[in-house]
Image 1 (tube, rainbow over the protein chains, first blue to last red):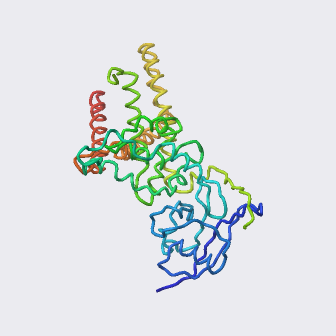
Image 2: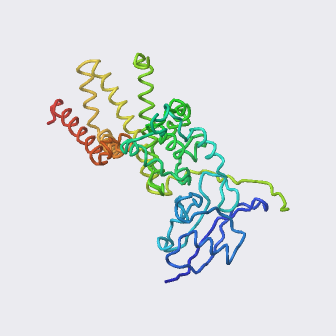
Image 3: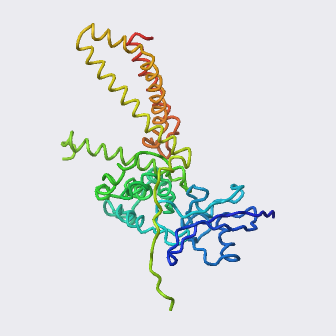
Length: 247
Length: 133
């Protein structure tokens, strides 16, 4: 197994000292097959135990280790060192307050996620014979892509609209609201529209498309947002121009 | 028991450097910037209608004014921006208008291709009825 000396700069912030965030450089011998998270773990275990960051699964499932790697939002567990030949600069996710080092404050996202009611609001009673809510493969296919979101918040770090307008509900929350709206078993769309179709919902999005570019699970939040825009526009037209359709 | 440490989250300032952080942001800003030229061209169209309503002489003077090198250059730039905006917009249509047939979605190229085809047909129709083709 080949090894190489890797130069890593990490943005450090310690709320107890009052010092402004600053970069600290570490020079570590790394295996070529390591990811950035392995390098951070190596630093914490052998050089600097005060380094703080979140991680859990190490397999791009939990969504905990999102951070900026050379300016791009990435999962540290999915960013291979071999893809970064020079200096690697690691920072906390953009657009979120920094709690300490690479740990961000995610309260804003969690609150917004709750607002879109990302859970099943049943349309009716389950099938009498089975007691189950049944669904065809085609109905599943309609929304399945959007179920793959792991709440890693890379899309929020990539979205300039969220950075400039923090009230914006943002890509992942809208996508997860849309995921349930598109589910044939769900009847909660009218409730979710209060948040999704608001100015702070889909209409803050100007279709930069960065959310979909950086999504580690290829969920395509930009697609979900545009689909909500179209459906909300149709809602408006039917309500104001063809009110007899709503009777 | 560990000493309680007060929280003091640091908020990093947002500056306009994000535009240059990745080519995708610059491309987006060019797409947004293109509306200024398209808007200016639309204003010129409104002026043209005004001159047309004033009679043949005013219309002839307006057409003569269009031959100025500055106005020609403006039209070339506005056309380039309009084509860029239209191209990038139609490229995005598969995201907004996915079509599901059975258990599969139509390929992106079919959705954007249909838009490009409609764009070409309508442009050709306008050029035909205006006597250019």
